[in-house]
Each structure stands twice: as structure tokens, then as C-alpha cells.
Length: 193
Image (tube, rainbow, N blue to C red; front, side, top):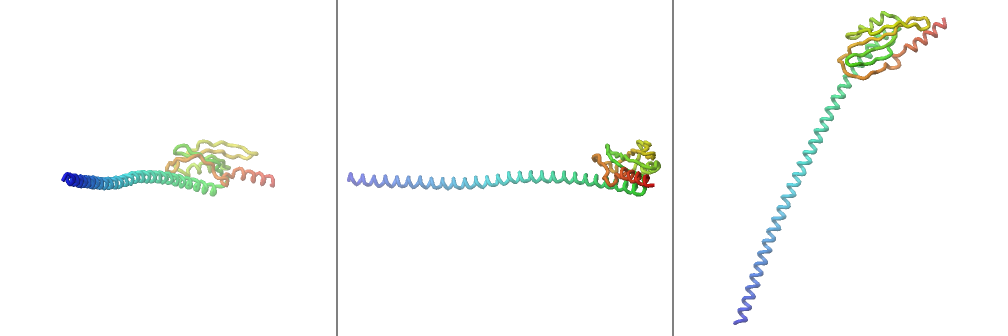
């Protein structure tokens, strides 16, 4: 009977150990499942956070691109207006010069909301007519110059710029700076006579 009790106690001890081990394993399994579930939740939250951070970064980048494009649009609109104003000025001056022979425009410069033209004319009265082509024309200077016994008038006229767009100083295109060419041809014709 002593051995039977020992065997019985051994079996009970084994069963207790088995149940303890089974219970601990079950607890570990549940905890590992909980850890896996928490890890998945953490990963999902991290993905959402990364998405939101990327979304915020993308939104900031897009906002910067939009601001840059708006700034470029405003600059290009300003340049376009300035170009159109200068096209109008140059076209008007070209038309005047083509209708009034023996007057040359050599340079255009700008200062604030005004622009100044410099040139030469064989007829003084055409300088006065030129000063009336644009708004608020003001003859700054008319100097009489003699070149090989011929009288010319060197002039400077200031005008209010159309729409007062800022621009830099510009020189007339070479095909409009024809005083030297004209005078050279004039001298050749005078020598031929």
C-alpha cells in the first residue's frame, strides 16, 4: 500500500505538472496571440501614421508647387504685359519713322514710369511731331549739329510709359538705327553729284 500511494501521488503529481504545463502553455499561446494582435495593430497604426505624414509632406510639396506656378504665372503675365507695351511703343515709333523720312531713333532707355528716346532728325519740326506720339511727351534736348556742312538735330524726348510697367534700358534694333547708314549713303550721293 505504501507503493500504491507513492504511485498514486506520482500520477497525481504528473497530472498536476501536466495541467500546470498545459495551462502555462495555453497562457503563453494566448499571450503570444495577443502580442501578434498588438503587433498587427501597431503595424497598421504605423502605416496610417506614415501615410498621413507622407500625405502631409505631399500636400506641402503640392502647395509649394502651386505657389511656384502662381508666382511664375504672375511673372510671365508681367513680362507679357511689358512685352506688349514695348511692342506697342516700338511699333508706334517705327510707324512714325517710316511715315516721316529723315528722322532716326537710336536708343530707348527707361527710368521709372517714363522712357526716353534719343535720335537725330534732318527736320526740326518732325521732332515736335514725334513728341506728341505718346502721352506726356517732353522734349528734353534738341541740339543743332553740323556734319560736313549739313545741319541735323540731335534730340532727346521723354514720354510716360504705357501702363508704366518696369523694364530695363533697351537699344533699338539695328535695322531701325539707320542714321549712320543713311548719312553714309547721303555722302555717297553728294559725292556722285
